[in-house]
Image (cartoon, rainbow, N blue to C red; front, side, top):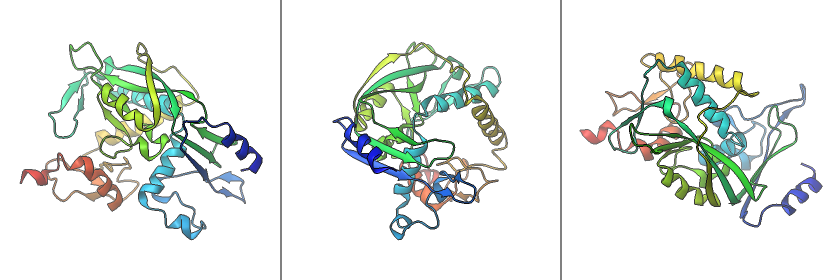
Length: 287
C-alpha cells in the first residue's frame, strides 16, 4: 500500500479505534491474478516470512474472517434465504443453545434486524483480495450498518433468536459467546456482545423479511444448492462441524465419543476450537 494513502487512512480513523490491522495478500506475478484467501487452512503464502509462517491457528483464522467478512451481512442473509427456499413446505428449523432443549422455529417467519453501529474499536485494511480493487476498509467510519437474521418461537410475537455470521470481520472481539466465529442467541445477548466491537448499537429496522436480487444472487444460490445437497447426503458425506467443509473436499475426523450424532472435523485445530461449545452436548458426558 502506498505510504501516503495509508497515512491518510490512519489520519481519518475514528477516535474510538484502539487497534489497526493491515492484511496484504499475494498476487501471482505471471497471471496478475490475486490469490486471495482460499481457506483458513492455507491462508499464509508459502513464500511468506518465517514470522508469518509461525502465526497460530487463531491468528490465521482472525485474518481470514477480518478480510473476507467485510460488509458481508446481507450476503450471509441471502445465503440463508436461498437455502430456506429449497426446503419443503412446513420445514422447521431446530435451534439449540448450549445444552438447553432444542427449539423448533419456522424459518419462513424470519425477520431481518437492521442496526446502526457507532464507534468501531478495530480498523482493518485489506489489500490484494481477489476480485477487489484497492483496499477494503472495515471500521473507517464513525457509524456503519449491520444486519442479522431473526427467528421467533411459535406464538411468541417477538424475535427470540438471532444469527450473525459475519461478526468476526471485527476481529477476535467479534467471536460468539463460546469462541465460535458466529453468534447464535437472543437479541439481547447480541446487543450485549456487540459492546466488544463498538461503542454501541441501535436497532433501526425489523420489518424486512427478504433481501432483493443483487450481484451476489447467483453465487449465493449456487452455494445454497451445494449446502442443500450436502445436507441431503449427510449420512454418507458429512461436513466439518466448525467450518462446514465437506468430506468430498477434505478428509474428516470423527468425534470419537459421539456415536448417535455424528460430528466431524477437518483438522485437530477445528476440533479443539469447537470443543468450547461441543462440550455441552458431547455424548462423552452421558457415559
